[in-house]
Figure 1 (cartoon, rainbow, N blue to C red):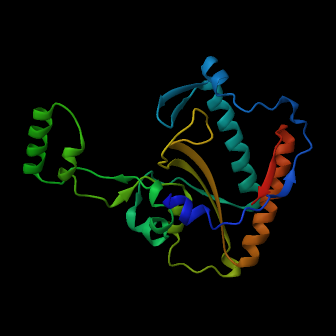
Figure 2: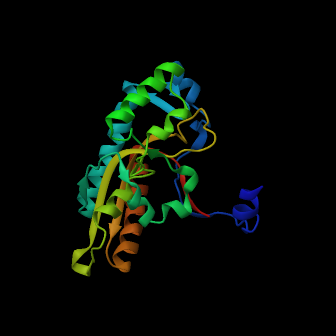
Figure 3: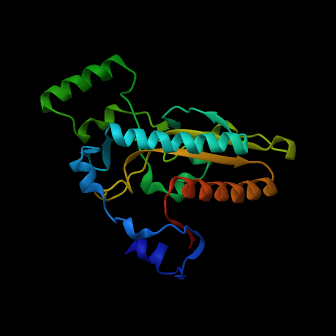
Length: 235
C-alpha cells in the first residue's frame, strides 16, 4: 500500500506518445519465446533472474552489440571504456541512487580483515554446518556495490570535470549490471544479472539534446536495416 500511495496513486495516467514506429509487419511477432529458447538449448535457467546464454544466442547478442558499438564510434566519435564490475558505494550515493532506487541496491561485503575474525567465522561455520545470516556480523565492509547500470561508472570517472563546447564527449561501455527486484519472470525482459551497453553524452545542453536525437534516428535506421520491428513510446 505504501508504494501505491506514494508512487502511483498521485500520478496522472496519460496515453503514451508514439515517437517512432517501424513499418515492418508484426505478423511474426511472438509475445513469449522463452520456452522455445529453452527447448532449443539457447538459454538455460541458472536461478532466480539468472539466465545462461547458449552459443547461438551469444552470437546473436554479440553481433547486435558490435553493430551498436561500431555505429556509436563511427557516427558519434565515442570513446569506449571497460569498467570493473564493482562500484564504490560513495559513487552511487553521490549520484543520488540511494534516495531514488534503494530497493535495487546490492552491497558487496567481505570478512573483516582480522585473523581472529577469520578463525571465529570458520568455527561458527563448521558448528552450524552452512552459511546463513548469522555470519553477517563477521562482515563489516560495505564500501562497494554491484552496479545497477554502467553509466554510474562514467559519472564517477568524470566527476568534478567541466565540459566546454570544445570538450563534448561521448562515452560507451558494456558490462555486467545487477538490479534486485521482488519477482522475476521466466523471460529475458527482466533479470537480476544482465549485461548492458551504455552510451553517455556529456557536454553542452545543445550537444546532448542534438546527439540524443541523432542517436535515436541512427537506431531507427539500424532496426530497419536488420528487419526488426518495434516502436518508441514516451510516457
